[in-house]
Image 1 (tube, rainbow, N blue to C red):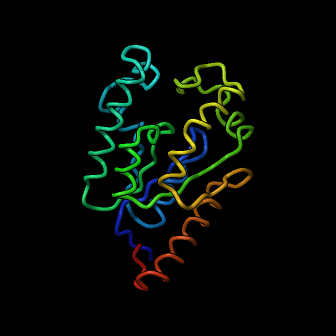
Image 2 (image 1 turned 45 degrees about the vertical axis):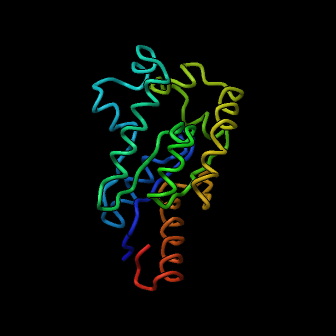
Image 3 (image 1 turned 180 degrees about the vertical axis):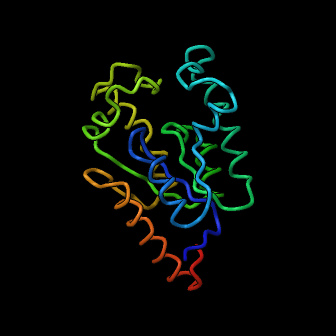
Length: 184
């Protein structure tokens, strides 16, 4: 059994599978999975698209940082699915680095476009997803992902269960190599 000693953050672009993988992973290692965007929606009683439209991206990013701080202050380790743009802010990168182990879930732009097609809830790209907009967003966000997540897991063509198994394998290898007691 894997026992987390720190939070586990899943980072990557929208549509890469963070929430789905996080929920499956949480069931496997018996911890809670929290989705940062869902927590913000619940607290603000408004969709992310509505927050962007009414209050702007800067205000949303403020709510995101506040919620990130709140979640990372939880004593018991959780799996945290970050929003795709959470790590644009360097202070959020530092918060995650200091409080969580991270995995970067990556999918190709073609895969992301296929997964996001018809999803109206993604304010950064709006309703008209195009490869160029997605590639631009990815180029802006990748440095943040790279800064916090030394382990990259490509999700193209893989089931979420396969991605979870691969993450569990890495966690087991880390726990055997570092402590030997199953904790990470």
